Length: 334
Image (cartoon, rainbow, N blue to C red; front, top):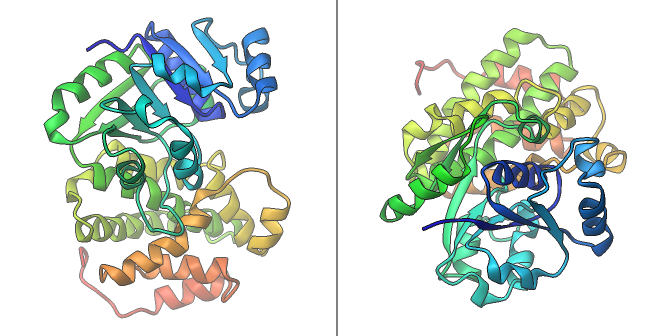
């Protein structure tokens, strides 16, 4: 199966970067925006200045506002915030998604339902074929052609299709590794955003690199417990979608979640940060969802609990560190 015509829903930084990768891979790309004026700007200037600055977009990318153009796509990428996936999928005509591969690129858990992105697709478009794209990547790096490697996950029964998609998208600067662990890859992508908040808070409070390193290590262990308890595979945490994405998000201020956490560590509360920022930090939304899931699946998750306390202004970062340090001693690996 060839994927010469690809539809990318969402013309933010990540959607535009992925459109760029697809165009370099010789695909004809339709990039779908929320407004006609945004589509016109991209088509006229070959730039998406709001999200990618002066980066020139490949001429094989055509921006659209009318989603009826999706009917011509043989492959669809959904690149919208996790909390809007249901709304966007509902708006798309159902027949456009029948037996069609759809790559889900958002990293987050739905607030009201606690569902992963692929579970939302199965509710709204049960005849679509979901795949998950996740891993360590910043949109500007990918759009600029800097080397990046990610994980593409799908069901094992769709292995041939998974391989074909990976081969289509991979190129000189963009490499995909395949996985059959949809659950683990989705959970890793959603959870790492939450721990990035914590690592940012550690930096904001000037607690040192040793503390941040310890936090990343314990976050890894906590994520493994989550993934296994919810039906995923332990080894996924050793992948690009696991430790790769966790490390990137927990060590760079380019990460919106890390940046948000840094402000928390500096003493600002959640509402103050939200008021002064237009950037979405998905971990803020996913944190309370993860806490509910931890209780539901009986996952020991002291870091998730601490992050929620910090977000809810129930304790400051120094108080939380003291509590975590005074927990009963355990054997490594527990």
